[in-house]
Structures are given as C-alpha cells and as structure tokens.
Length: 319
Image (cartoon, rainbow, N blue to C red; front, side, top):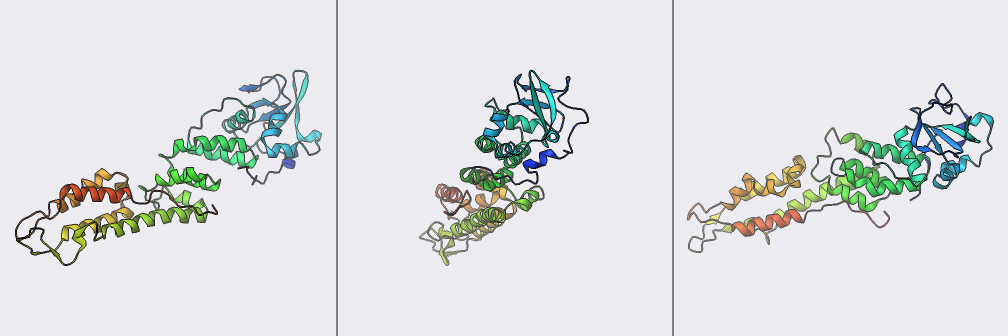
C-alpha cells in the first residue's frame, strides 16, 4: 500500500530554515558521517536532527520516495541547500527532521542495503511515521514483515498500526493477543485514545463477543445437564431433586472474570484447575452422596468451550 504523505512539511518547505539545522555546515571536513552512507560519488547529503550526515544518491531517493520525487521537480535555488564539496562533485545538503536511527532504516531500504532491526514498537511507529511522511512504500513493506515481532509485548499498539495501514492478517493476529488484557487499564488507554473509532469498536466488539459466547455456552442444556431445571440425581435409585449451586457459582465466576480478569482466560490451566471447577466435579447429591458429574467429560466440555471462544476481530468485506 503506498503511503499518502500527511505532513505539514511540503517539499517546497525545504527552502525555508529548518529548526534542526546545525550551526556549522555539516558538510565541512570533520563532520560525522554515517559509516554505511559515505559514498564517494554521492550527490546529496542528508543531515539528521542529531547531526549525522548521510552521503547518498539522489536517484535512490527519487525512486523510493514520492516526497523526494516531488522535491526534485521543484525549481532549485541557492537557498535550498548548503553546498558540500564531495570528491569532484558539489553535493546538496538537506537538513532533515528525523534522527539518525530513523533515517538509517529509510535510507537502507532506499539504497538496497541491509536494514537494521527495529528494536521496539516505538521505533517502529517512528519509522512508519517517517515512511508515511516521505511516501516510501518500500519501508512500509519492510515494517509489515517484521511488526509481529512485538505482538506479545505490545499487541494493542501493533493492532492499531496494522489497522491504520490495512494489514488485515497482522491486525487479526495482534487482536488475538489482546484477549487476556484489560482494555480499560491506564497503560492501554493512551493507545485507544488515538485509535480510529472503527478499529477501536472492532476490538471492543471482540471482547464483548467472547463474553457473550462464554455465557451462551455455559448456559447450554445440551452440553451441561446441570442447566436443566428441575434436575434429578444421577443415581436412579435415589432420583432426588438436585440444586446445582456449585455449577451456577462457576458460571457466575467465569462470566465475571472474562471482563474483570481476562488474563485468566489466556491460560486455560488457571481456569480448569481453579477452585470452582474442583467443587463442580466433586459435587455430590445431598441424599445419596453420589457424584453428579463425570470428571473427564466435564473438563473436556469446559476445555472445548474455551477453545471455541472468538479469538480475533472481524473485518467486513469493505475492509
């Protein structure tokens, strides 16, 4: 997907004073040059906001970036750059708003070099913002291939990023890692605040569908005979009426927990070995003291129920 630049910095703004411009001419001898971008015949120098120079090729910038293609169709003036003598050429110096770490990723993709690893979701977001700003679809493709590295640590931020760019499979995978999270927690709320309303609604709907599905399956009379009212003892010689209070306590606990303690549902073991389940499988008739539930089938039914809960967000055909 090609990015549509959404920035207040139009290519023509390069003629204006850049707030990150170093006091000294960064193209002067002795300036810090990035070790991977010091081509002797470079015709352009990009200076990062932290004062690192990248000696690069204009043609690579034009081929990889819609922003630079637009820039180099504009009439060039002497005020648009500082001349830096580089070999036999006079290289144009452009002062950029991005840090060296961000420019390294962008320029590595543009120049078909080994691209450094993105070390955090914050770094990913910064690179994506720059790729969007400079209209660099190749960088976005690179990010897409590696963004799921961070899905376990930051699933909501990965989900928001994937939704923004229409990366459907990545968004679904990220949403599946949110099911054990409290979406209303203070640590997650800042991401929700900047998320597109449709994407947020889709994520909230996933959590609501899980709760509703859990309640519906726990109430099934076909799967759990304890839901049948009135209910009789499983001992045919007893046939006393049985009130399945332990089962109803389990149902209340689980339906409440999926909203209040969703992390419990990220690990089936914690639920299936919980006190409520143990009390259910050991429940006995008050008259004849016969166990009312088969342990293996009850655990299997509960396990299947958990497996069948919705795991990912849903996208309609228009998405």
